[in-house]
Image (tube, rainbow over all chains, first blue to last red; front, side, top):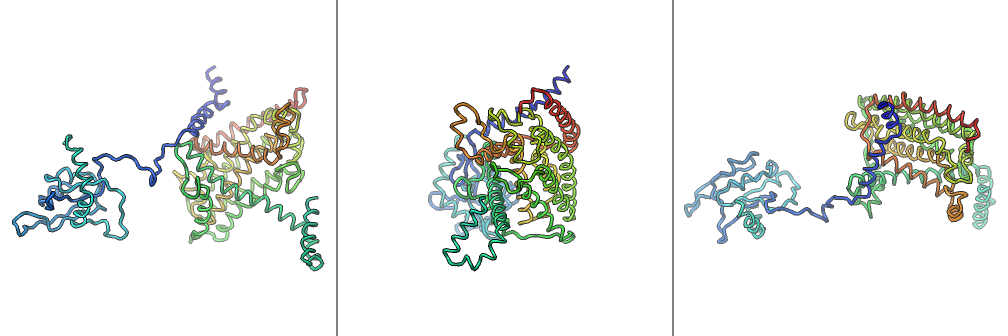
Length: 162
Length: 366
């Protein structure tokens, strides 16, 4: 008896019709796509995008060349050289991040004792030549100078969770 | 009739220019050929345009069913997308594999496309609107749709690539198997219409009951079988093992690029539109008004030309093609063969007998 019922069920294509009713319903559903260049998804203040180096309000760069970020970087994307500056402080002479290697894990930012290296919300950038995505200290500092307001606001928003 | 009128029009136009006496000797003997070629163009060009926009419709429908917008970047609502795709394919380099059989490799796309277009010769778009009103129309159709498989086999063999070869074998076996079920389904139509002339098949469905007089009611199982077999014949999802992206890349046309690929694409879509046209002619009364003979609706819709009904019925089937593709996962190959040989062929054979018997009884109303 059960076999007979199954036989007729398969011949009447009931299950196929059920499946088609599902897709048929979704045909009239509103699409959920975010149409990227016109629409953008909301960002968290913890968004990890392009890197930047920050300065103190008096213009002094924050980085003290402790190399914690270089040590923690799982992708070995950071290269740091350190030397003593004329005023006797410890400063980096070279601070490069190879964005091609970087996996944007945010460990450098987490490990930094002085909040010098940060990841900003910027994600719409590109390189047109080989080496364009190899960011040097000057480029990172320039990034920081340009977006300091946003960076500071994001750190402030995150402060109570740290 | 139209032919003579058109000739008169050309005559008056050329006399106006003073060229008629000069060109008469060339035009009059060749006029029949010229007129036929014009009619062929009047069929082929809309089909090509239809294919182009059917690809857009496919992507849009699939998109909507997957809750996304589909192509919407080229032109308003993506309406220029087919043009962009066509241009891209035209500009692409045609790569011929070193170890391929060059002649067959280039001949295969043509062999695939030609029968797909040639079959349109016997499709009636409206009463009398048919390129070749031949009495063996249905036989011609079966012959033409069967020829399409040669393009696929030759493409797979000439490419000298294992994926193409596997795809061609799968496709050939599939098409041959489903042709049988398709043929038997059409035998039922022949029985009911008692004619192989496509126009007569439609006229046989004319009645006072509108859409209830069409063959889809007595032959409903055959409509289902015919359409599913048609989906399998055109290698469309869920029967697209011949392409099988996940296992054999693209099947028989992996090695084709540029216009060679475009021709296969055109052939596939022209075949889909053909299956839709055939299903509407055989089972849904072709150009007939579905409300014919009905009290109010019948009179209200009497002015609508038959071509509109025909196209409307075709678009139902075309939409169904896309709906099936959006819904069902691909069949396994043995399941496909089982469905063809052990379900469809026995079912169609039984229905041939049922219809033949039914027609001998007074309860046959069609």
